[in-house]
Structure formats: C-alpha cells, structure tokens
Length: 222
Image (cartoon, rainbow, N blue to C red):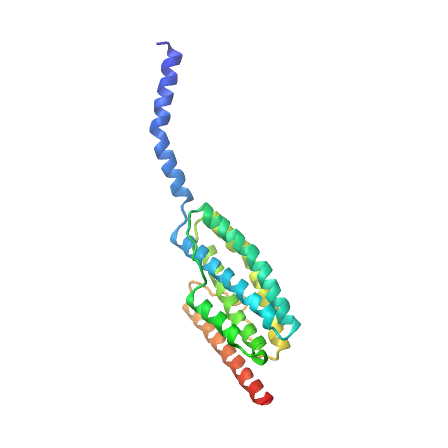
C-alpha cells in the first residue's frame, strides 16, 4: 500500500474515532439549561394568555383605549410567541398546550366581568401580568445559558415595557390609583428579596385600589 493510501486510511479511522466525541460536544453546547427551558415554557404560556386576554378586550372593552390595547397585545404577543416556538423547536423543548391555572382563571374573570367593571379589571390585572413577564425575561438574561433563548428574552423586553407604559397611561385615563415607580418597570432584582417583597406590596396596593374603584363605580351606577 502506498504512503498516500496509508495516510487516507489513517485519516478515515481517526475521523470515525473523533466523530462521536465531536457530536456529543456539539449536543452539550446546544442543550439549554433548566432556566432556559423554564423561560421558554413560561414565556409561551404568557404569550398565549395575553393573546386570549387581548381578544376578550377587543370584544368587551368599553373605551377605545382598552380595545386598542387588546388589539396591540394580540399582534405583539403573536409575533413574540412565534420566536418562542421557533427557539423551543430548535432546542427540543416541549411547550405547554395551554396557559397556567392562574392565567386561565383570569380569562374566566374577564369573561364574567360586567361591562362597567371590565376596563378597570383588565388594566389592573394586565399591569400585574406584564410586571411578571418583565421579571421572567430579566431572570432569563441573568441566569440563562443558551444564546437563542436569551435573545428571545432580550427582543421581547422593549415590547413588554412598551405595553406596561401604555397600561400606566390607561390607568391614568380610568382614574385608577397611581402606581409607585420602581425605577425598573416592575422588574425584580433576582438577588434582592427586599425589592421583590416591595414589588409584591406595590402590586397588592394597586389591585386593592382598583377593586375599591370597581366597588365605588358599582355603587354609583345603582
């Protein structure tokens, strides 16, 4: 056997030996960590819930501002969810079939709300939902490992912040109680329990104020 043939055979054997290790290394590099998986699943549920809530707002909203918010949520979260689903498919992450129990219960509240209380209920609860979505994305950016999953969170952040700003404006138009500006758009510092507790307290105060508004409105219309 000539020298060139012997070299070709050796190269072939070497490639067969190295191929499994190379494939395993590539698979390990592409595998998302637990945080990436949690993020993609939760982001998908959040998007699906926002799309459903937005459609209800388009139908039941009393003010044009709330109807427009509903349409915007449907369009934006449909686009955001497309990126989530594409990334999950590429990373072999199985996504839930439906929103979580809390999100489904909120949709039922929207369906059951009277015309007079819907707008205030929608705005108050959507502010809370978007604060959670912002915290979800910030946690992924801080703790995720997969570049594609982190890009989904990074691209979604300005969209969700924009929704939150518009909800603030809607709350002012509806004369709901003012919110306290946290300086982070409602996003929690993952390393600071005190800040997280403060955000929860702010959220509870806001929801309590919204409920007071609803009760006052109901009494006034009797």
